[in-house]
Image (cartoon, rainbow, N blue to C red; front, side):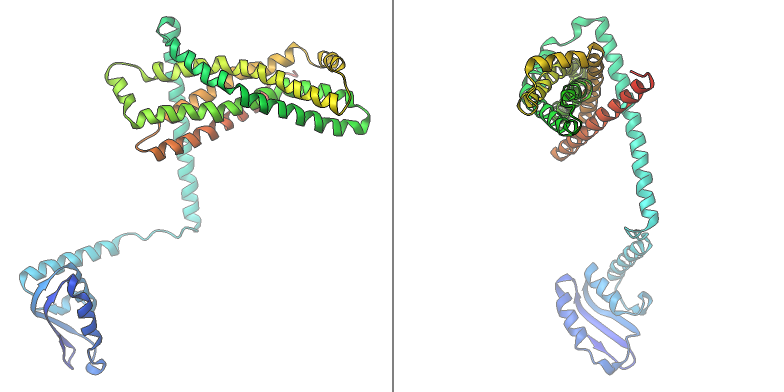
Length: 363
């Protein structure tokens, strides 16, 4: 490698990836007073690859300043030039904190949300049609699968729902007693417990626990079948995945959640009775008499009427997210988390709609 005072750099030998460290050292040893490099003579090159061509372009002031290359080396140099031009033409990403990027992100999330709602409505319609076919021919319902899911979603959920409901009754009674004691109206703590547990809290917390426990299980089970291509195999042999996988789960949960709501109501009232007896010294007889006067059948039915709707929402969302799983175990976990969040959001949204409708009807 020789650099003349006129700015002509004569390169020779091998310019390949393995030679780059040596070539860099030689370039650093070139005299600084020899003038800027104006042209590069490559007639003495014996080997050239893309790494050497890239270094040659860095040394030369412009691609046109390189001359004397053999035909086989000129093709390598031209490919590197074309690749560099393509990279230079690639649009640079916008800064992450730019206003346009944030607006684009909001728009994309809104569009994805609208598309997901559209897909969800289509899935609901498909479930309704399939359920209607099964109602016309009820012997096509898989009773063994329905009983299995009823056991898993109902019977096995009794301990955790019982514990949660008892603690909810205790908390409501204790907090109500603290406030009503200021007005010497401790007896109305029983009214507070009865109305809040039977009308709102019993069914609400039972549904939330079922969403976290059973809804996530539905997503994980169907999602795992999706990744193992078992659902595709079911379609290949003529089975309807909606009728085989979704309808039994929906039916089981619609049966289980009202029963769990009744159980949660009873246990919640028991928790309130314990606090009333321990803190307020209200006997069980007095508690039951006050409770019977404070709440009636309409209060109980309002809470129970929400349970089947909550159950359908939880089951359909869980199964829908399971069918959306694609590819890997990570997708199963992601959609399972999404299923729980969406199910709890749906439960709260439906409960709010019930509250507004009942308030409008003055019930």
